[in-house]
Length: 476
Image 1 (cartoon, one colour):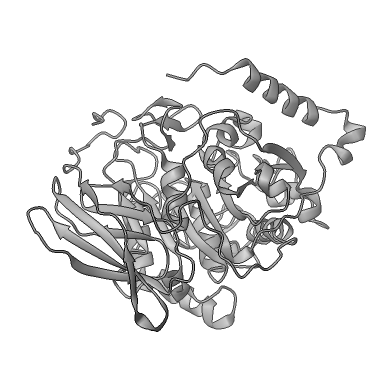
Image 2 (cartoon, rainbow, N blue to C red):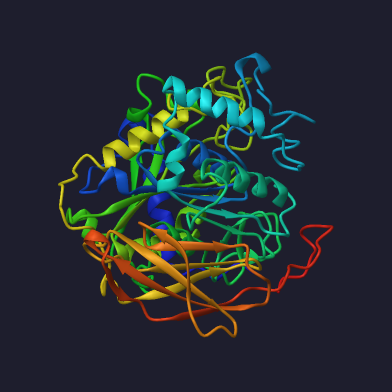
């Protein structure tokens, strides 16, 4: 069931609504410009749910040279719908066409044409080199109760990334498909029951998805805040970031939101994570419930992370001829804004990039990496599926890389399974219901080995139950 909302929270909602519900003549000053902070653009990351997941993949592929990691919740591979302007006003979003058919219900389309188009765009400079995925951390989630986007589509996203990781993730990618979630942003303690595919599309599965995504991208973080947050949720004007075009012509709202921790407002070194809502989750549809309850702000507050929440709008050209047809406020992953929607010059991608540029404009280069307290002393089991374990650890200053070692149940010694430059690792291809132990050894300059982390143990989940009717299947 929905959690009871505190009076303080209701006051905040009222403040946001009051700020937005102003007289038409004052609309031009409804929100201030987006601010600038001391954040390195190359430490940025992005995640999204549903249409936001498809957009997160598009943005992460287009700008792979600066995107450190991508979280894909109930989404699919890059350029899945393969829409073009020639497909008409609806692009490929119509009955029995790619966006609503293979890219949602499955089976997903053949990826060979997608690889060909991706490589062509990379050669032309329309997107960055997709092999930059080797420098990214990728998290993909498909709930087995999802009745909107088939888990087979999520698996196609996994295969897309593996193609550019030369067939093996080497720790970059973690795929979670053993949780009984419906089509939703999944949380530890807020939302509808875990198997639901309705309402605000936020489900309580006792699974801290936001934290798992952030730790897979950035390594072990300080624990999330469980009390009052120190930062502020700010509204900002999206209109100046689409100018001279109107945001409505891009199917974007006039106002977006950003969560800024107190330390980031004080211009301490910070990082930016972009969180993209799904269809029917924009502010007009559910007010601030995605922004407040997706789970990112609590982690941001204790780890100097700025969370950007761009906003779309629903559109109908019958009532507004300058607005694309987008009845559910989805992000454009099939071509309703223009034929180039999936590359750097795409209207929505350009706008989100402009937001990221603005947020990171105040960056002051610091030779010391941004680390959490106790660097090098902590290793955590970040997530487990039926065939994988994700671990993360705190970054060690001066480390050239990290050697990941594993011991299977009953084995006394550890075996090296990978070497990574970032402080996280997704170990896939494991046996269900099996225990494993891990430790990480630091590699220093010249190849010398530094200290090893403590040992952590994890047990993979059982094979998920068969789910022939998603939304009705039991949740373990």
